[in-house]
Length: 169
Image (cartoon, rainbow, N blue to C red; front, side, top):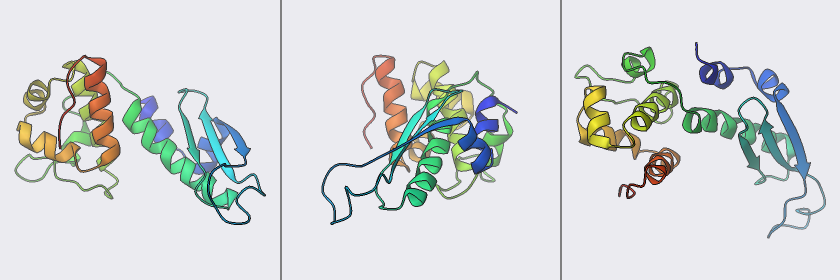
């Protein structure tokens, strides 16, 4: 099991134990109690260096839960690992015809996306090359990745790092 997967699948308490937690008063528009309590939460995941925030709620507890969900997403979407084309996460995300077909809410989605982003990184963000390596069509790959805005931003972030123009959805 990779470090990325280990971190993403930790129980909340154990993942939180790896983080530096800051609470602060969120600024901006809001109700009467918006600036009265330190309800905003910033998590710094020390092993990976990732930072996430949540400040939507007046409840620190709710914001901490949101920040943990965002941290798990960031672990999958922002940390790259060496490419493994025949990885179980990729196999589990395919339908009977071999196309990537799991939905956003499916727990197999983010692990598959993480592996696909690893492949994109290895091809310097060349989508056609990545699709060939993954044994799928360019259309299926793009359709699968554009289903989630955060994933799409991660794809275009990789492309920017490799001096390629962003993909249009």
